[in-house]
Image (cartoon, helix red, strand yellow):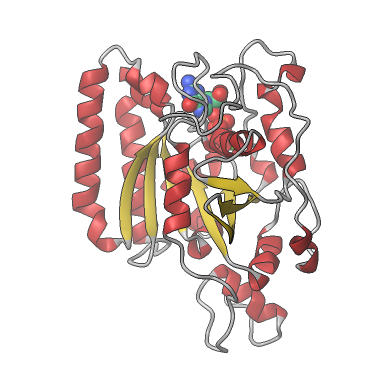
Length: 319
Ligand SMILES: Nc1nc2c(ncn2[C@@H]2O[C@H](COP(=O)(O)OP(=O)(O)OP(=O)(O)O)[C@@H](O)[C@H]2O)c(=O)[nH]1
Ligand SMILES: [Mg+2]
């Protein structure tokens, strides 16, 4: 995958805090969304009442690479166009910079890292407003959720916790990360495949995903997968996992697609955000249109609908 600009962060290396920040977006002032660390569920709702957006719910066990994926999108946009798009006014720069701190030279580290997301941080959303380079008026708000992997792990064995995953009903894409590091080691491989299958099964059984859901399973840390001592056998096992998941789940979902990424290969063999451009393009290609979410005074279905319904005084709390 060739870089789209020569000014890409050096492969896998620590990078300095960039001085060029994405331009402020005046239109978000109209929506009354202040610049912030990250967006809450309510702030995303307010933003998407007035504009077209795509909500991506990132799911995955602890250390599967959720936060690093978010940081890699941010880093690539700081250095120019990415995935055929320009960034036009990220509002959650403070939170993204904080997330990216351990990959900056200023952190004093020798190798880049990402800080573990704690349960106490709850559900947070990060904002990537983008426009296609070839079509500057094509602005879309891409909003990506992040939270601690512990909750997803705990929810696999406790279906009552699934109700806490409020990001799911509103998501245009449910993106389940399959940890490439766990796959690369024989002792953790079976557990990683099992966790991904069990997550899909549980979300379907609880009705959190259904025939309207676009689900993407993303194998992360492709550098480690390819560097595994039995890389050929592992590649076959990943193919078998995907085929079985298609057989068992595809008919019950809107779509089921598979991707591989290396958001940050510390050795630098793979380009920074390797494969992430393809993922971002897929989000821009296939969202539900969401210009104004609440038009009809019908019973709300998604969490965002329910919240707006309550705010407008149109009904009781539904969940
Ligand atoms: N080798 C390699 N390591 C990666 C890659 N992406 C992420 N990592 C590492 O994987 C570890 C976990 O990444 P995180 O992004 O913090 O994972 P997370 O899913 O956010 O984890 P929680 O916050 O605990 O839920 C970090 O040490 C990252 O540096 C990659 O592409 N290649
Ligand atoms: Mg995290």
